[in-house]
Length: 235
Length: 235
Image 1 (cartoon, rainbow over the protein chains, first blue to last red):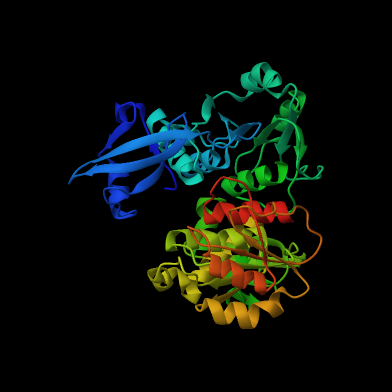
Image 2 (cartoon, rainbow over the protein chains, first blue to last red; image 1 turned 90 degrees about the vertical axis):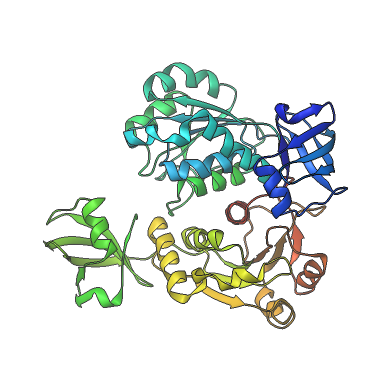
């Protein structure tokens, strides 16, 4: 946790918060704070700054908060991912929040196992919890928008063309395609397939919607590694 | 597992192997193979190719193997990492094998907790197991070399200058440094610090050994994410 994120409900006055949950435990066990110490804090979807510990008791801490810094800018990106297996999904929410992805669309695909949609990691509470862990890692406050699209064809045919318009549209896909571009200076719409890849029908439909296939070399990467590698190369 | 990796000891003849361990289970449960099916295989530190299932019994499978393809090339890189926490270390061995790192040096640093060196994930068996998982993911056969350096100063002063000679030497380090270069066309020596970063004394010593600090932006990345992001940008 490189930034302590504050919720609206933590505030007992305009510049005071009281914390009694995992953040309090973290302050005690990892930061080993004492009264008078300062910590980096941020308000969820708001500014970042400093907090000074003004009261510390057995079960809670009171902090005086001063918020005056903008959070870091996000990437100019809409990321579209075929839903990965649950274990991967949890870390992926953290990773995309850390990397500064502002909008993630989770999409169905032929090779996505139906059971993947049943995971508790797709509940709004679990999504938010993992996004916050990723923001705390990166020192950012702004929650990415997560959109769930359970039907491939209606999304790609009806809604994707408007999303991809005026952006560089890319599909990460192994094969005989151009190499993924570097240091792109415009907004990007990027789609990354499931384990085993998109099927040709899906690649065709994505291309019709404005997303052109690009490849990253012969090595097959796990989804989380592919996301980081593609974003690091593109931006 | 995108490639079934074969050990020398699996061979019962020049072109025949018998498998009875987790690879046999994987073939049955994930690939659901039948006699006559073919699979992608590779020999550890050797060639890749195809194998045909010639016998399938309750507890083992016999495959006829034909190896004729070179594994993918490795990155021209020596990667130096401050030892991360054990949970991270396990995945990191997989990730560096997947990404094609040929040589990893695990180094001590002021902010590495002493207990990190005690993890069972640093035993040769555990290292090999996780490297193999990473190679299977990427479809590569060649095990990276892993070197353990428990003393920072003697390594950086006495051995690092020779390693870094004739390479582009870089230290990933947050701060007011040049941005990490892109698409480098020469061999690289790259050092990545622990959670909390290198201390200034360490950065100075690394610079004297030929490694210059570069940064990746304001966001603080987990070690595994930083490794992937830096390598994807540099190569």
